[in-house]
Each structure stands twice: as C-alpha cells, then as structure tokens.
Length: 601
Image (tube, rainbow, N blue to C red):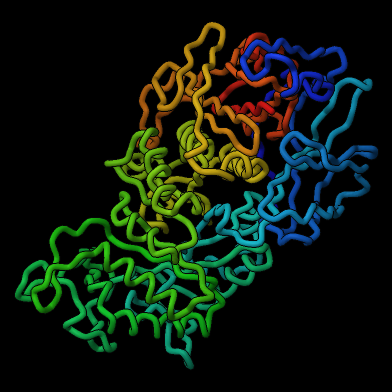
C-alpha cells in the first residue's frame, strides 16, 4: 500500500504514565464535591511525535480469538509495541522485524489502539507508528461503511482493486456498498442464473464486468469486510413488463392509473426509473427471486435497499392511496423472510420513513442520507437521537452525507480537508459514522462521480480519524444518546459551550460510558458557518490551541484523566496530571485542533 503523508504536530508535551490513583470514591467528601485531589507530574514522560511510519493489519475486523498480523517497515531495533484498551496498557513486547502477530483478548465488540515507540534518555517517548484493531463478531455492531461504484475495464489490471481495498482496510472499513453494479433495477443480475454475462451495462450505460464485481467481493472478504449489493426497493426500467413485471404493481400519481410515478434520468441513459408499490406482495416475490439469482452467482453478504424520499401522494393501480412508509417496512420484512441469513440496510432519505424502517427489527444499522433540510451540525445529533429511540438504543447510525456538493457541481479538483475533517470529527464524536470512502471520496449522490479527489494529506487524515473511531469505539459508539451529560467546562481565554455548536466557541459533547466521563471538544472557534456540508469547499482549518488551561466539574473523586486526538500523536492516549478541588478538575490540555477527547475515570 502506498504511504500517505499527514503532518503530525511535533514537540507537543503530552504527559503519560504516573498519574496517581490515591484519590478514589472512598475519599471523604468525594460524592459531595468537597474532595481535594492532585497528581504529581514528576514521574511522567513527555511524548512527542514528528511523523508516523506506515503500518497495516491483515484485516479490517477480527473475530474473537483471531490473531492480528501487523506489517510495519523501518522500525528500529529495540522498539516496543504497546497494546491498549482505552488508556490501559494490556500488553507490551519488543518489535523484531517488520511483521509480527498479536493475540488480542477474546472480548467481543472491543477496540484497541496499538502503537510502536522508542524511549529517549528514559524520559521521552517517540511514537513511531499507531493503528487500531477491532475485535467484533458482527460488523454491523460498529459499522464503518464504504462503497465501490465503478466496475469497468479500468479495474481489470492486476493490483488496481487490491490497492483500493488495501486503503479501505487501512481505514478499517468493514462493510462495502456496491452502487450501480446492477444490470436493471428490476433485474439486477447481468444475465440469468445459469448464463452470466461477461460484460453488461448499468443504468448510465457504463460497462460492468462481472469478473470485476466478483474480484471486489473476493478481496473484501480476504480483509474480513462484508459486501452489500445496492438496489431500490421499488424500481423498474421501461422494459420491465417484458421481463415479467406486471402493470398493476406500479405506483401512480393519479387514481386512474394513467400516470406512472417515475424518477426521470437523462435521455442518454438506459431508462428513467419507474416506481412500484413496495408493499405489493407479487412484486416482493418477484424481486426476491431476482435477488436469489444474485446470491446464487455472487457472494454478496446482504442487500442495501434504497428509496427516493417523500414522493407525495401516490396511488396503487386500483386507486387506493399508498402508504410508502408502511410499504418500506413490508418490503424489508419480505426480503428478510426470503433470505434470513443476509444482512439488510435501508436508506432513510432525509429521515423519511425511519421509524417504520428501523421498527421492523430487520435492518442491522441505521442509514440516513442527509440533505439541505438537515444541513446543520445540530441536525446530526437529532437524527441519532431519533434513531436511538426507534431502535431502543440498539443500532448505530451511518450518514450518507456528500461533502463539497456545490464545488463538485461546477469544477474538478480536490476535496477540502478542513470541511471533511470537521464533519467527520462531529459525526464520530456523536457516535455516528460517515459513508465517504471507496475507490474515491463521495461528493455526490451519484456514487460514480469523481469530480473531486482526495489529496494525499486528506487520505492520511482519514487513516487517523478511522483509527481513532475504531480504537475508541466503545467510548464513542458503545452507548446511546441516553448517556449524555453536560458538565461545566471552561478554558482560559476562549469561550466554551455545551452542544449544540456555536460559532466562535469550543463545543463540548459529553457522555458517561462504563463508569467513565467522556468529554469531546469540538473546535468551532473560527468556523464561519455551522453547516456540515461545506458546499463550496471553502471551510478553513480551525484555530489551533496548545497548552490550554481547562477546568471541568466532576463531583466524584477521580483517579485518572487522559486525552487522545486523531489530530495528534497518531491518536495514542496520554494521561495528564490534574488537580481536583471541591468538585472541579483543573489541568492543562496539550492541544486542540479539530477534535480532542478527554476521558475522566
């Protein structure tokens, strides 16, 4: 895999090891906030990092009991590899050579941070490389969703698909959506069950090579990723009736079935898409059979189901008013009954039908395509809160959110790093994930669009952010929004507010997780608007802070305070000295760029 460069701040004095645990919950007065605790920094080591070596694992996700294989070139003799769960070191060993294996604990659904370091003059750690590890028996518990959308002859040369998937693996992408891979919406397989076509055309008349689709699935499975095929729940092309689709299965904009509802597409494409009634049992049986042909020939792990948002008032063939939301639920249940061992996801476009979709209990995570009606950062939390309620706090949320949308409409060039990173920081801090990484980065709802590309710096930033989300998934995604708290937080010389974000403020988003208080600092100090979309790709990087004195209210006596950030030191956790007096913790935050996470134990 090619090495991508991302500037890591050098010389930031992040303090580690030696944090006192002498004050605990048995300290007199701790529960009433009158405790008085302090930590002596005399034994701590300063930690610095200037650049990180290229390190990788052989899989994006590991089953409990499965060994992890690491590859990292250029590590000097005598370097140490350290394995952490949160800030707790659970193992260390000396690195010997460029490859080694590790047997993580068998605890299911757990993230780990692994770093390689050397020690200078017995006081200064130099972090050389870092990477996350996810041990989970089911990828949908902590979904990190990617995509692929081009299957033409450009993907045939040896190494093309392998390199693309190596990057997704480095970002721990554990599920991949195949967009626009299919022949027809009502007949997705290219060919028939017993006679596959070598090449066919998608809806835009682009070539699709069956061998390319198969190769993507094969390579993804080698990395432990799952492969999901995309299709609408109710789409048919203009020739559908010749393929067995019946006239009385369609949806109509009038009660006399004279006008089919359709999604218009360019005349140069195969066809516009005509909408059917997703609740029609004959249509459900028809498409389930077509899906059976897909599964019989292509080793897909599930079906990613799409819709088109609120279509207004529609009618069935006999003039009855359609309830699309109920129809979505009926369709999901029929697909699960037809193939119970396959994973299902369903797009809630602008949250349309989310309650019915999630309420089926047959989708494995929440998938929200967000548009201009949910364009503000605060909307992202609102969506997760709603999804938590619909799923009884059991399903995690993935956002299909297209960055730099207007820029992609008028020009070619590059994605804007500050816009992408700020949005990812917010989504990940809230416990969500962002569908954005594939054979390129998404900038449009038409997934094959490559109008905007990633710079090498952005590629490296994505590695750090997905490492961070994976390593600390239990703190970020291991609970629901019901665990939110709002401790009073202050910082010297800068305004701080609790969620929702405000321009000119550091915004905190906090939760109590497994006895720990997790305080996420999100930097909106010089952000000029509060839309996650960064439509024109003009967002600037936030003002950076270093050595920032801070206080946080915490009525219980604490034993440890640590920080980690995807923006510094490869996301490795750093313990900090602190004072706690009368229920207020004071400490110096080493650095804040986009996002820093504080954990109080």
